[in-house]
Length: 192
Figure 1: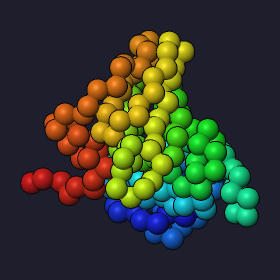
Figure 2: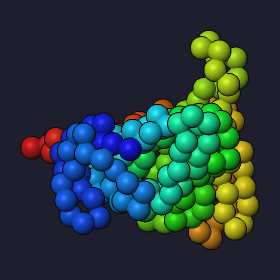
Figure 3: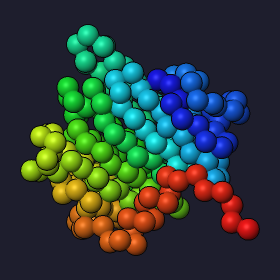
Figure 4: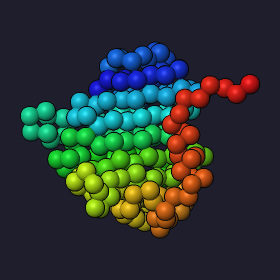
């Protein structure tokens, strides 16, 4: 894949500063510092937006452009990442998985965002939902850990979990909680 946008301080695991257009390989970590963000476009057109104060790792990426077969496995170590699924998930939704410290997120062809802070993970399904006006297949996410699993299939619903707590029953996101999700993706200049 490639860094399709880098705002502020974005680095790889070797401390190399990343810029728009730099290539990303499986095994790479993307470290986004304060007041920064980055967007990654994978070869299957999956888009990952990484918020400020975040670190993710591309654990596995395999994709055959002709057959559209592939697999994406990524880890959010901390911070925030929004995922808009591409060809791999379109062909076989089970082949896109995001790990968080408290468990896993299996995507079923959709857009979602995860926040990871102090061992707690909050996962928001953005959509599309059933009866969407674009005629898109409704998406869902399966959020799991050793203590349980929930299916989130209503847009703008979220669940949360920690290593010692099963994923909660999905609930509609409040306006204040949605604002928190959105702010975690922004690259904001420091206030004076």
